[in-house]
Image (cartoon, rainbow, N blue to C red):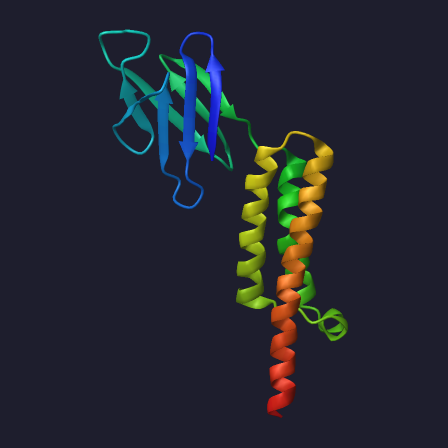
Length: 169
């Protein structure tokens, strides 16, 4: 995820973190900072002769802060409790539905490792989308759509398993 914001002292700061691998990069006023290690960057800021060190604290899920010359700049705030609950809804739904014989006899869904992997993937994807919007009604809409997509995929796989089991016997 890429976020560009303006700071009064340092100008435009661009923070980029890949979702899958968590690789980070930072540029200030269009100039890429040198990566020292996983969370430390350095470069000349505001015409300084010495390198200034920038430390990244956290990640997209926990919230991200940059530490520049002992000044903390918040990039992404921590997830709010309702956002965490929203992100867990697809996973919990498939976890409960996939382990209930009564519910699976009505509407079969794949559970176990396959259902958990699919619902976990979509829960993580929901966190990314929730970070991109600010309005609560959009967050609720994203939650509903991703939950429905997760359920539909798990239903289609579960239905395929049931049909293949019935046709083989």
